[in-house]
Image 1 (cartoon, rainbow, N blue to C red):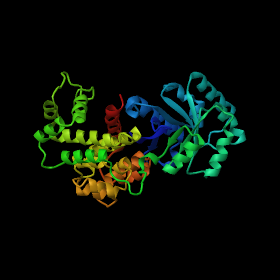
Image 2: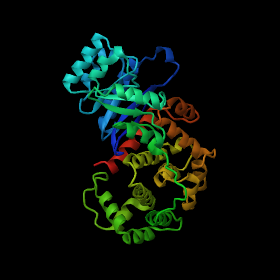
Image 3: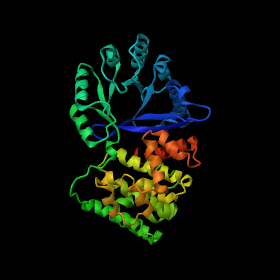
Image 4: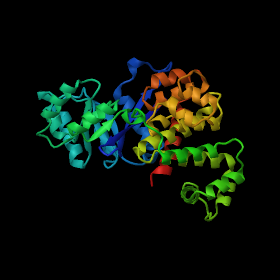
Length: 404
């Protein structure tokens, strides 16, 4: 596979996941160059890889999938090969409101497809595209606040929804909310809302104490069984998880002792860490804990290529957004987790080591910065096919836990 494929979340006004934009890039190898890669080839290959080879649920178990459409792909009506209830046709900003384009998009609307206009700026000669659109994406990095306000006034007569793209800060998110935007795409939800003199709540302190107990190197299987048995929430949650379709057991497990014995010490600790961190994040957008879990699994799968420990890499990914979960600076948060491996702490605080390189790769990949990701990957034996497979295995792992 000569493509790198990723996704970026799009949230609604309540912080729930509305869908994902499909991100992709063709690898620049000796047989390809930037000059002979065009959007049509790229999108066509991605559609084949994503929807046929990978499978729909591996890309996104919930929500819509936004796919970029060039002029030629619209004219060829490629959308007809895709499920109308799952995909959104994202018309690229350089597509003009020509008659043939409008006819194809009218056909798409008639068939029940949803149409979004990407990075759109209202111009009179493009208004016929607006008339067909269901969603307008407005770039918050490209336009000033005044320009954004002026733009949305032009869309008032039309029956459509607005999507704020490249929303990087909480301030921009609040601004977009106030203006009536329905959907939000960007990294704003991954960043902590730092509050002065904010203390860890008693509820959070209890969970952090539980995480310390779980990760104590001296803890044994018997200690874990005793600990879980004394925590009604975790007792119920772990048994529910073990008996879920995720594990596919033929007979029901009714005791914690049996569940822990079946999982083993290492896996039990992994699951307890995951369940408790997700509990810390229960008042946050679900996408935040989904992303944390994707990072954890992705990091563990990539560990062998970065010469890192698989178990430590898992914890690195899981705790990589703990500052956003607790809305506190990472340095302050890590003081509460004094049991975490020193190399993880260093990586999370930006100090160069093999774990930071792994985390840098994961962040670049999930942000769609495939050039930076490939630059790091070239220092390892990672191949694009491995990257794609591991990434979507991590997504499937995470969504099978949180999405029913």
